[in-house]
Image 1 (cartoon, rainbow, N blue to C red):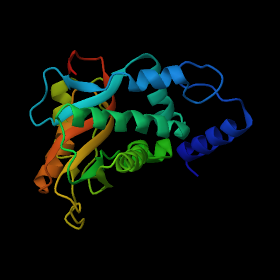
Image 2: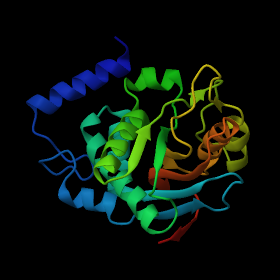
Image 3: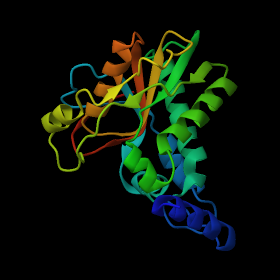
Length: 239
């Protein structure tokens, strides 16, 4: 059993035997209290890195990556707090609906919900697939809302990349070029268009590469949705 899986199991056990605390603010009670859930869902909006890199799909996020939102995302991704998947997916599904209401995405017809894949070594270290789990839940919530959302995991890592931390926007783009693909052995999604999902957008380089790989496989991408958008760069925020 790897350290990531062990940590996730330990976190689940502790959740059962110890009083829960909110991952966002630390208050006793639910893993995400009403106030922190409100912070996650109060301001879904178009948030584009500035400058937006060429090839970036229209990009919407549930919130800014700061404060309670940042703490909740880190707890979910890095500390095995998988109980937060439901509230984060709820924030993302609400953001999709806001994008539809804003005319950024068509609600008619079927579409594929495509999670941006993590590197295998990252998945092993974490012991779970954070974005893949969110994609399943988001698609389920969108179907409940009457949308024809189908999860498709055909996007895959084509090669290893170096750690993105500390890289400039240009360096991130160069690091990621050609890193994702749709393997020829993988059949295309059963629908003609895709909605990309990721946890955080910073410079947009990862979403650009994911969209490029899907488009190269003949799958149009018009919208990307994330839980949060980082403040590392200024963002053009439009309701």
